[in-house]
Image (cartoon, rainbow, N blue to C red; front, top):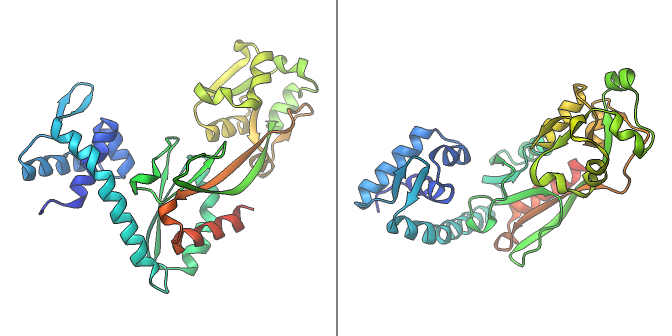
Length: 288
C-alpha cells in the first residue's frame, strides 16, 4: 500500500464530519491539503470515496467501508505507538489532548513543567466543544467539565473544580450597583449562554426571573461570556478562579452550591500508559 497514512486520516475526517473545511479545522491543516489527500487516495484506490454536492461530501459505498474499518486500524496503531514509547525510560512521542476552548489556557503551566521534565515529549491540543470519541485513537486524553462520563470503556479521574458565581466588573458595579436578592436580578443587564448550555442547573433560576430584554449579550462559549462580563456588558456566571484573577466583583446575591468539576478521561486501553499517567499527575498538581 503506497498511499500515505495522512491521506487516510484526511479522508476519514471528511467521512465523519461531511465537510472539507471542518475536517481541515480538526486536523489542523489547510482546506487544500485535505482535498489533495482525498484526490490522491481515490486515484490510488481507483474508486470514488465521496460524492461532492453543495451541502458537503456524501459517502459512496466504498467510503462507507472506509468509515467502518479505519477506526479499528487507528486504534490499533495508537495502542502500538503507546506501548513502544512507554518501553523507553525517557518519555517521548506525541500526546493528543482535547478540551473545551475556555479551559485549554489553564493547562499551559502544567504543560510547560511537563515538557521541561520530558523534552522529547510533544503535546497537541484539540480545543473544541465537540465530544470526541476516544476509542478512535485520534485523541489520547480528554479534559471535560460537567457531569462525570459513564462508560465502561473509559477511565475517568477527577481534576480541579471551581465554584460558579455571579460576577460584575468593577465599572459595572460602580455605575449600576449589584443585586442583593433574587427579586433585583431583573433590574440588571445580563450576559448569558445559548443552546443546551442554558439547561445547566445554575442558570434555571436566572432565566425564570430575568426578562429576555435584559439579556443583552449571548454566547455559545463560556470563555466569551467571562470576558464579556470583564468588559462591563452585564452580569454573568463566571468561575470563581477567573473572577478573582480578573478582579471582578462578586454580587451580594448568589445561587449557592454550584461548581464546575473537570474530569481527566482516557480509553481503558491506555490504562498502562506512562505518558497518560504522568500527564494526569502534572495537571492534578498545577490545576489544584
